[in-house]
Image (cartoon, rainbow, N blue to C red):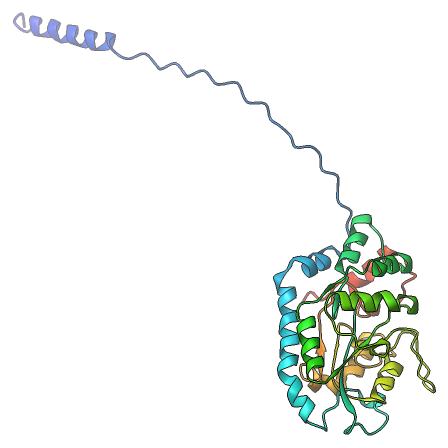
Length: 302
């Protein structure tokens, strides 16, 4: 037992030495003072507008332009065949009042959102929280700044080059005839003369125009031309819509669905049109919120 004492003492000394050399707990690094948080300036709320997405799509989506290019290009590829076929006619049956096989050929085009782009006017309404009104619309038209829709100039010039009359039927007010013709010509759309433009004030003797329907004016064109094709962004650009409801619109188009993409060429217009008031029983006099509610109720969720 005595002999083991030095060993025991040595062991204790080693242990004590190890304990004395144990590292002290590290002192946490001082935390830097937090940088001052900069809050962005408050952005004023943007008033809601039913037309915002539609106008944004019209002005910025490449898909919009491609649809127009595709439609006009498809029509151009079929135009010469229609020109050779003397039995080919694109007027609805109720607007064709006589023989047409020996008449000169023509195409009929709507103007607004068919050959001319008025989306800047719609954008102004959104910026100022307004709705369509005749005074602001007339002021925009008189600026003569509407651009041509993609593909419209190439198609109409091709038609004119091949002896096909280019006829425009528009529901612009009669006092806008001159500025409209000037705008068409500025962007390169062919206008052979005043008879090539049939505005809202055009009269056909013996035909009673109902509201802004274009039937009488189509009949007037049909008296002088075999109509090869029609172009528009509204059903009323092709056939009379006397009952502007979902059922009435479908009924008017039913006899002509086979003509779509061959004789009739329809462009998308999500910004305005007769499709919209059909959702709220054509009651434009109703408050804006009430009209919006009826449009929401018309949506399908399945």
